[in-house]
Image (tube, rainbow, N blue to C red; front, side, top):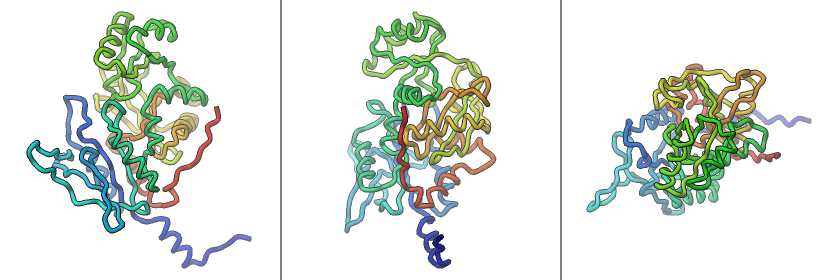
Length: 363
């Protein structure tokens, strides 16, 4: 016998499960490693506008100078103030730090979005990771989770994880020391050109190099290892393409995708490097593979990058990487058929979506 709720109780249930909430976005505005480009945080405006239109309270917190405090049984996040460009105002050597008013947070109504965790040993800090980890221990919903962030931080790990689970990936080999290129190239079949990239730590495509010969590859690896002998490098087979695709996966479902055409005179397809983007419809097979990649890293909100196969309907795409904190500016400006941020923020109005799906990986 079906149990039918009285209308009053049904409306009460809806009211409890679907309601506005508070978002606290943790960033690191000092993380820019490039010495060119616009340093304003235009994405802040996109996030703020989307949240305001839905009645969602939005706060930005910089990891630098951030600390958590308690008062009268309530929990607060304390953050440095921001300037008009969206950058944290760092304290002067002889001056006091300028802080915002403390932000009250509660696990029942506050969604934590750590977008500035960065890369361990490069643009990250163990205290920042511990802060988000402790929020999770206290029962806060964090997107991404520390587990997802950690997995997505390694292109090599994800590549191997995807291979184990029958996703198609470009052939990838790690370089384990400065003179390891001959062995690594032999595994790749000694076929040039080849892609050299950092397994973690690249920003907007910078940190990805194409090598045309053994001499240039070997010298490049030696130089990089001279500057940082512990950096994780990988070699990847080169697959010539005209474009790749970024798909956004929310709670296991693709909600938007865009084609990123290879930039003129380059081999990369990052919009920040001049590549043009356009809205793109996935095939059923591409959708399945993107959703599987997201599931394998326990992703709540994931950007999946892939290279399409020649026969997109029948051949699996090459999954390139997964991003635990995908940028929103590109996809929001490219996809005209829907408001991507509105869909994401609306999704979390339902408190039933403030849980993690337990998945079992079958190898």
